[in-house]
Each structure stands twice: as C-alpha cells, then as structure tokens.
Length: 235
Image (tube, rainbow, N blue to C red):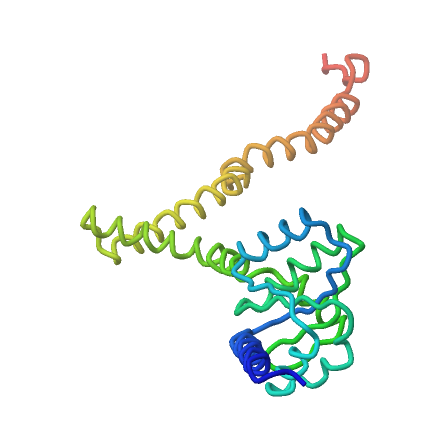
C-alpha cells in the first residue's frame, strides 16, 4: 500500500496534468520509444520555441486526469510510453510532431484532442497541414496591404498638397476623357470625308463617259460626206 506521501504526490501530479489539459486548446499524444538523447533534445527545443509544453507522463496519471476533463476516449490508447504536447496554439503541436515523425520512423502519433474533443488520426493530419496562426495573419495582412497603402497615399496627397477630393475626382475624369479621345482619333482620321470623296466620284464618272464620247465622235466622222459625194455647184 502506498503511503500517504506518495498518494499526495500523485494527486498533485494529476492536478497538474488536469490544469495543463484545461488550459490547452490542442494536445497531441505520442510514443517516443527509440529516440536518442540528441533527437529528443531537438524535438523539445522545437516545441519550446513554438510555445508548446511537452512532458512525459505515466498512463495511469494521464487516465485519471483525462477522465476529469471529459477526455475518456483517450483511455484506449494509453499504453506504452506516452509523451504529451499541449498548447494554446491550435496548430503548433500537431504540425511540429507530424513533421518530426515524418523524418523519424521511431515516433508514433497516438491520438490528440482539440477544445475538449478527441480527434481521429485523419483529423489530426488535417490539423497538422493547416497553416500556422502567424502564416494566416501574414496572408490576411498581405491581402489588406494594397488597399490600405492606396488609401494612405491618397490621404497623404490630400494632406501635403492641399488637394481637394473633388479636384482629384475631376482630374481622374479628365484623364479618362483624354484616353477616350485618343482611342477614337484614329477612327475619325481614317474615315473619308465627303470632300475627299468628290474628286474620286468625278474621276469615276469621267472614266465611264470617255468611251461614249469617243464613240460619238467616230460616228460623226463616218456620217460626214466626202468631197466626191458633195453635189456639184450649178454653173
């Protein structure tokens, strides 16, 4: 029978695990058997840098703590050496441990939980592939950066140059009108005017009538009486 001191120690350990589970948004359990001291040290350093708490825990103590916070489904995987990684970051524990396991066959991801719900292996893998909080924030800020920059430049122009918004709008409309004029100018230049068409029409008519005039002249010449056919003057 364990003495009272040992019992108090175990109660304190369970209470500590309960607090860690309650404070965590996400937790991942893994079997760490076979890791060298160097590998274990590297993993701990990576987790610590990401703000993830990592500790080895006895299955009996973890089972008691899990039952107190509604994670009874973890009971079936609590066998063999177990290490627990917990964090307020919903992605970091799964992302770091899955990345580590990818390059180390000795590591086995047992299970995990998020917001008080035990996750399946597929759910854990999807969670591990989710971009980190910092990456998501960077993407959101990047998408907002362009409009904000444009607004900042506009406000700076108004403040420094004393330009009224109405003037800026009028200037923009004027630039748009000039662009439309420049686009239509070549079309107007290419369209022939009525004056330009007149000489071409006269020339075409002249060419059409020229053969008729020539033919009329030839007929007149043929109908003209010759000197022999003229009647003799009366003597």
